[in-house]
Image (cartoon, rainbow, N blue to C red; front, side, top):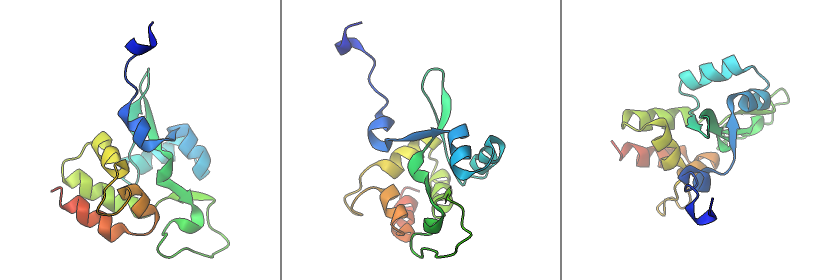
Length: 141
């Protein structure tokens, strides 16, 4: 097949970068895939079916080192997990869901640069600026 005729790459790839499958997320969090599926059902994480065949995948940036679960107040505790889900993600995903965003639309919104932040909503969440991000998400309602 002529390279110029190949199907366009997934536009999310240019936004997100690294993706993790459910087993990859489970390994990083030190748990089992069933627990990851529950976390997805609870809305603490969101995933998108990608590839051929379609496999549920989660942006790697949704996971952070344990001491940065809340980047606005990093922890110094010794008994923290090595990796965890970014604490501010769930509330933001709820706001986006309430605005009618699908999982794919929410991921796209989180990783699309926003000049008013500056940067992406995801980078702002990882920096501890959840109030700014949620205010913008609520404006989508």
